[in-house]
Length: 82
Image (tube, rainbow, N blue to C red; front, side, top):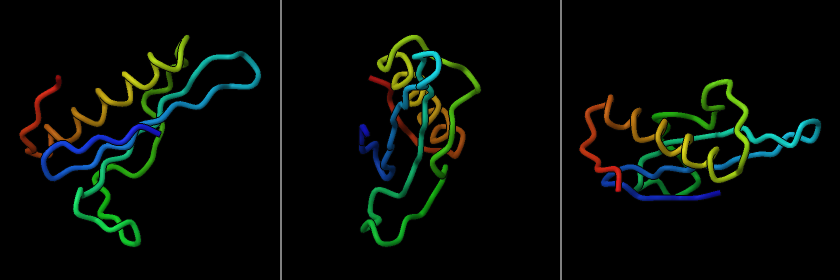
C-alpha cells in the first residue's frame, strides 16, 4: 500500500493482481490525515477504482492516486498533483 499525506488528507492506494489473467485492479481510500488508526474518518472507504483492469501495478497505482486526488478536489480540498 502506498500512503501519501496531502494537506489534511491521507491517501491510501494499492493494486491487487488478478490470478486468472495477470491484470491489476486499483483500490483507493481517503481518510483524515489526523486519524490515529483506531478511528478513521472516511471520505472514500477502500474501493475499486473504475472497473478497469490495468496491465501493470504501476498503472493501477497511478489510476488509484488520480481517483483519490479527484475526490479530495471535489470535496473542496486544495491539493496539487506533483
